Amino acid sequence: MSRPLLFLDVDGPFNPYAARPERRPAGYTTIRVPGFSRRPLRVWLNPDHGPALLRLGYDLCWATTWMAEANVWIAPVVGLPGLPYVDFGTGLFAERPDGVHWKTEAIVAYADGRPFAWVDDEQSAADTAYVRAHHPGPALLHHVDPRTGLRESDLRTLAEFAADVSA
Ligand SMILES: [Mg+2]
Image (cartoon, protein in one colour):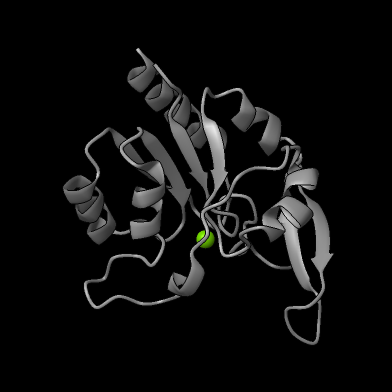
């Protein structure tokens, strides 16, 4: 059986943007990305995250507003190879009247029935309902706290899901 997909948001899971701004969390490094506004965007990243994710038994895929830029700015710092990414196209940031996140439909379409987990800091019950209705296989929508980024407990949950669906 093929491995499940793991869709990766950047801001929240990798970059704990909601952490106290005056104190960089232990284990994180800082990059500054130009081109967002007058000032470069400060991003905190943890070089341990990539190797840990690669061990979990998934095929990894970006599901982030960074899209292709995630391979330029994020992947090398967190220790990931270049990854495929979900191209949100005109759906990027497009709010829906039903409250489903603008990423969800594209993620379900990309998965095309394959089991998947999705780590993000913005999923809601509407997304769970949408996935149940439109995705025939197993799916795990896993919320990551943007104050902390990915933690050991998140990685354990992801590893258990991968083991379950691969069994
Ligand atoms: Mg996010």
